[in-house]
Image (cartoon, rainbow, N blue to C red; front, side, top):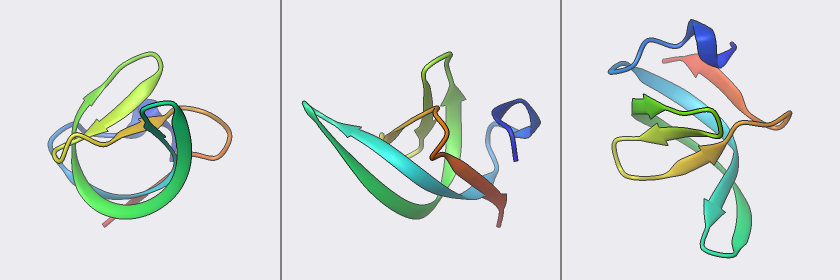
Length: 60
């Protein structure tokens, strides 16, 4: 699913690269998406997934 198909405020399974300070880690979580920027998909918990080729979003 592309970020343009995501409805902000709904829960999704998100898998991808996560910016954590100076480190980039890979996570797989189910969270509500609160915001989408040009660079990040931001979850209700504050996690910021980098929009790149590793990002996968599925309906939950």
